Length: 123
Image 1 (cartoon, rainbow, N blue to C red):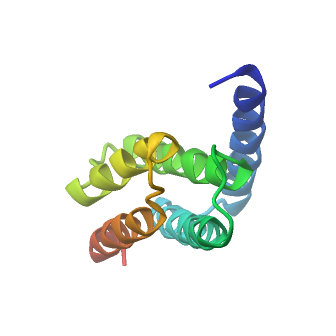
Image 2: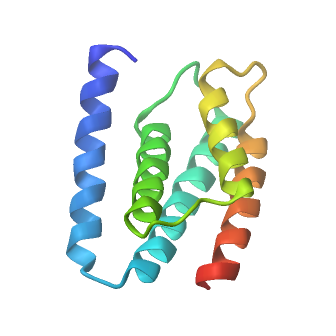
């Protein structure tokens, strides 16, 4: 990650954390809210990639990464463990910048599986 990417990542991370802090809700609600946000980001990014693939991460993709990190922090703050499906999603997410051909639909599918598994616990 170069300096510009790092700066954008930090700014977007601060923005998302402010949104989470403003919720002042119970941890389960925060997890459901994060899942909804990540789902929105993933859908928008995959749809955008299908229309006009870009060679590297953009701010929307960075928001997916930032929100996934926030989800990990939410689970850790509850002494919880992220499930296997979530780990698969984060592995797919980490591989996206180097994937050729792009794996947008694979990202969406892996997120949907992870979301379903998490909502079974926090639904």
